[in-house]
Image (cartoon, rainbow, N blue to C red):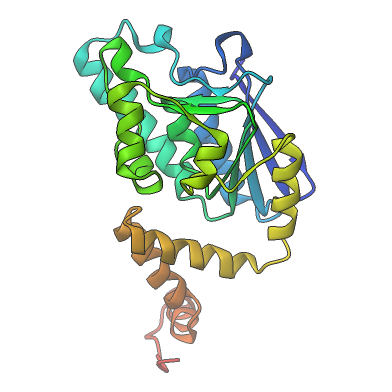
Length: 255
């Protein structure tokens, strides 16, 4: 079992972290499945948005399953567990479609980092955020001190990472990390996803790339994606491809 549920609701893909006996802790299989599903969603034009949530009511995701990484050597931990997680989380963050985290329960460590990859976050009233890594002698490894630090003010993130404190849903909204508190976060997330589908998918994709370029979310890739988009829409691109296929010199118009 991958531990990731995949479901389509209209034009919205729903990914559910499904490891409730361990508070939806992330395993290697779950990370691999998450990456595969994100790739599938990216390539499927019929899917217009993504909602990410957790199974059960207690936890969205309590972080990484210690059993999955606790036995790794320091080199293996840094080279594979941390780097692979970063690659997969980055792929979710840069998905060219609107994404919503329906934080149905506690989001700790890697769970907080995962939710932070989404464009919009909703929280259940009892949900809390935490970065508890120091309690077991490690530090955030999947952008908890990087991407999350762009979303939560310095003082608040230090409360979590340095003092082990939790942030509740109402405060998360006040800090600007979460957009809303909702009793049924999945239903509310699907409503918002449906509203987003009334917008131009190309316009929202380009806007997302522009925002990411501005905030430093892989600026190089965002800028090249924007430039490639403009070049691909030109008459010169069509002429260049046609000339190559027809084995002739291109006659570029500059249009």
